[in-house]
Image 1: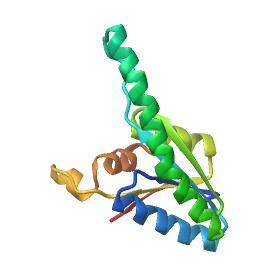
Image 2 (image 1 turned 135 degrees about the vertical axis):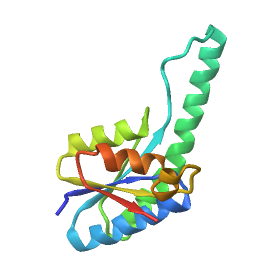
Image 3 (image 1 turned 90 degrees about the horizontal axis):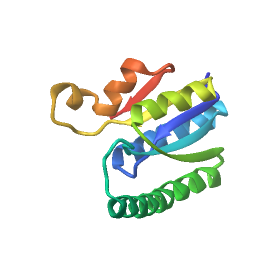
Image 4 (image 1 turned 45 degrees about the horizontal axis):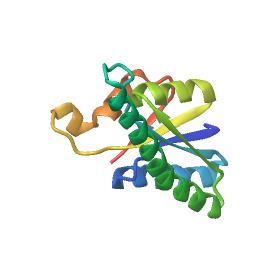
Amino acid sequence: MSDTYIVGFDETDASHRAATLAAGLARTTGARVHLVHVLEWSAYSFLTQDELAERHKRREEELKRAESVVAPVAEALAANGVQATSEIRYGHAGEIFCEIAEKLGNCQIFIGRKGSRTLAERLLGGLAITLVQVSPVPVTVVP
């Protein structure tokens, strides 16, 4: 059994369902829940000094907003007897989840499935299909 359940959390109904499932399993297995919110961010862009300053300001605002979304969920899980931690990262979500999973070791990833355009994305979702293909640990996709 996994020591940690990594949950992709972005405030959508799908991510709430994933967190609920992971928390329920954590209560029965003694695992901890690690909520992860990934802010998509590309460092590769040619910007003016003004654009860089504006981008930095937006990044700080996004970070504060993400913290205000994730922290209350982690606190609610802890109040219900589930050991919970959280992390906010910038980058490509698939790469970030795999990196965290490799670092933690004995873990499992839970993500919610969202509706999408292509058939593959409709069946699994963009991030879901990426993680199912490349994750070093088991992935649970919650409908």
